[in-house]
Amino acid sequence: MSRPGSAPTRHFDADTIRRGAIACLPLLPSTMIFGAVLGVLATQRGLSLGELLFMSLTVFAGSAQFVSVDLWRETIPSVTIIVATAVINLRYVLIGASLRPVFRGRPLWVKICGMHMVADENWAVTMTQENLANPGFLLGGGIFLGVVWAAGNTIGYLLGGGIPDPNVYALDFAFTAVFAALTVGMWKGRVDLLPWLAAAIGSLIGHYTLPGTWSILAGAGAGVIVAALTWREDMDDTAPETEIAADAYGAPEGTYSTEVGK
Image (cartoon, rainbow, N blue to C red; front, side, top):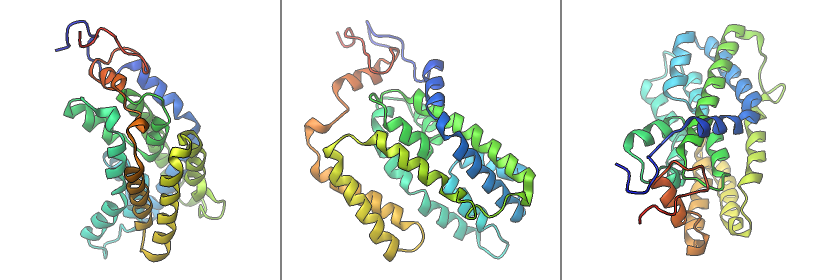
């Protein structure tokens, strides 16, 4: 039930979902290309198109899918694939924690639906928004990227071996370039300097000292620790207005009813 004087609770609305999808439009080329490369790899590993698309629907994590498909051999134990993909996806623990303002006060089913459609890209785009109280924006971006990713998988699979090694044309650098561009919008000023610097140093140390993709977690962990140690109350973007918007969502992002709580 909504409180007296508040707008009806709406967890997802069509307009916000649409805006989330539109915000991810610049990611279409890189997502399509990367998805196609995975499709080509799937044909080389003997997966069917149905198996590939089922994986994309249920897992929806590009880097983990690449690792699991690459390890898809009869001589590789299933537990090895599970552990490898779990390590890569540990970053979603930190991503989920950063999305607390988005899901604060929401029921469990909203959190499950929203988090399942979280990819690195729509998470990064969502985190550039001034108001994070709306899960519809995140979901819209995730749905858009999911459709494009599946389309890329299908195209790559049908083309088979027609796509050369992505390293030849630096296609494997597509997502790196996208994230480099997205970080510009996520920069909030000097308050981010120390955490970002710690994350960079942690990643470099991890790259040269740790196996596989542990460097990602090393960098993320270093950044989170420094951010926690240097945090001050005046840095918190989740002001009471965001709490109200999350409880009585119905107004557009960035607005809230002053009657709520009276």
